[in-house]
Image (cartoon, rainbow, N blue to C red; front, side):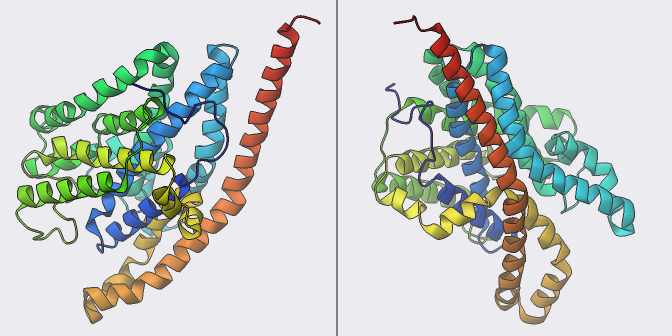
Length: 387
């Protein structure tokens, strides 16, 4: 494979990727509103994008650190400053609410799993869970990836990492099929929930991260027709597998959990491949990058982490009002009335979280990065022979 033009040592912001986050976040929001059921695939884009960016960062850290210890220190301090503040601020607020508001007291049973980033497994073991925490399963999957992947980058020679990625991609359908057909049935899970459990399991998404990591090692510049052809293929296959839209309104043959015709095994591979293509196309520049660099998408993308944490509990808080609107006006009109004020609250809260939590922590992370870079430059200067 040819080395990608996006070097891990390259610094600065990559145009268009925040816009991808923003569009994916909108898809997730409208999926939860039952308006655009295909929007669940936005989570897959987050996983693929994380695989690309984290691998890029890790290879840069390994190259710039004096040793493995410095590599891990550099990486985990920056990850902590990026991920933990908003997440734990939200959990601490919920902990206080659960201790003081009787209606939220049940959260106390679920919060420990969220604090430990194992909420995806909590969701499997305890099927009933709160809307205040349910969406955090995907952040648990990402954090578990963050714990494992740095070791692979540190221990595997760089030239072999693409092979590791390809092995993980090929293993993805096999792992999902084994979970669905063997492990969960052996554990006594009911057939109707097994695809859900498979989706929540971290091992089911490692091929998504691998697709993203692979972007660092390939130089492929997909054209628009490549994306359109992949969409057409997915649409055709989805309709053939699922027969019709049926109850899966606007899922285009790709319903959440994909329970039919072993779609849960191979379907995620095709979804992940599509997002792999999209990210490659954004990095290549041109009209696709310009689209994802639109100011509104860029704005939403920068705030997507806070938005993701906030949007689902706000939906839960407003659910009684929403259900009343649906009952009084029907789905279309009721949702049309509900969405503008709901989104206004979500985006206002996420903007505040970004301004007062994320931005200060990001600045602290950048200062730490700058100190590390200066220290490295000083060590290199000391090692140079005097002239």
